[in-house]
Amino acid sequence: MRTVLIAGAFSLVVALFGTPLYIRWLVRRGYGQFVRDDGPTSHHTKRGTPTMGGTVIILGAVLAYGAAHLFTGAPPTASGLLVLFLMTGLGVVGFLDDFIKISKQRSLGLRPRAKLAGQGLVGIAFAVLALQFPAAGKDGATPASTHVSVLRDTPLDLAFAGAAAGTVLFVLWALFITSAISNGVNLTDGLDGLATGATTLVLAAYVLICTFQSNQSCYVLSEVEARCYEVRDPRDLAVVAAAVMGACFGFLWWNASPAKIFMGDTGSLALGGALAGLAILSRTQMLLVVLGGLFVIITLSVVLQVGSFKLTGKRIFRMAPLQHHFELAGWGEVTIVIRFWIIAGLFVSLGLGVFYAEWVTGA
Image (tube, rainbow, N blue to C red; front, side, top):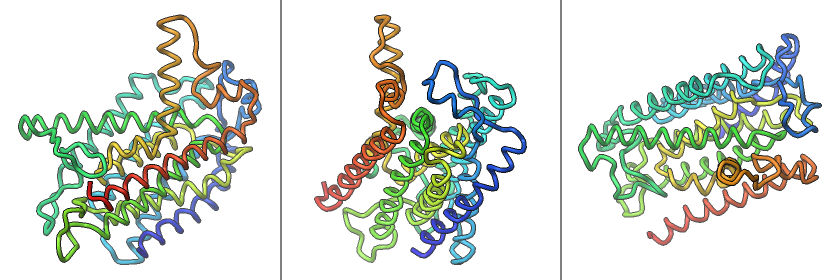
């Protein structure tokens, strides 16, 4: 547990005190946010605000993970390193997107195909590697399995048609999860502190979930119980979740309204990658739909808006994503953010309740 606490505290300090230094560096170089003219008019005052703040979150999390293991002497695990790889890799894709927007002073960064290709390459590499690195003493368990998971692995095995086909199907499944949640966080990142705060709540849930899985691990219990968890490295996944959560907390101090810095695609794609990696490796793939319910709702608002306009020529919302609909309806930005945080917290509470209820009942 010390490793988890050190990781969270270290990343919090790095982000809290490192962000203002990064802001000054960005200001000197003139790296400010480009704001679309077709967005809410209230956002025009944000033009020029430093962006690419996700770099601090990534750096803080990676440094905290290393420091926690260095101070405690606990070796890093394949699972922890893989989640950090997915987070950092998607962060690099987002950084390139942000940098092009800033340097070209336009709302379009990477071309859609290039952006999807970058996300795809990182996601595929993560998925393939997640089925490698069998652990000695843990029945050769790999960080991920080819089973579809809800609260733990289900009997639905993607390798039903053979090992090779199972690997391909798992890669596609993992790629879908990664793309869905990273783009969901990206769509949510439209108001000061909204995506950062909501992601922090989901990460806090994963600290609790992975710690609980560690205490009820099939690989450490003296008597294996039917309710134990066959997760390869749950404690180290809790360390990663704590490291990213602490970095988000520290960054939120400067990202809250009125934001002194935006996370940009650098941060939103990276945080989405961290959540996807945690869900896949902790065997809680479908539970993420509940824990990240706010991201799901906001993504659905965009899907419904686009679908309705293409089919009927009419829009359902004043503007999508959903948070901008309420802006145009006259809600204040801070009001929207706080209420959406409440919604995110309710979804996280529901997800934790479902997770614990399953263990208690053995259902």
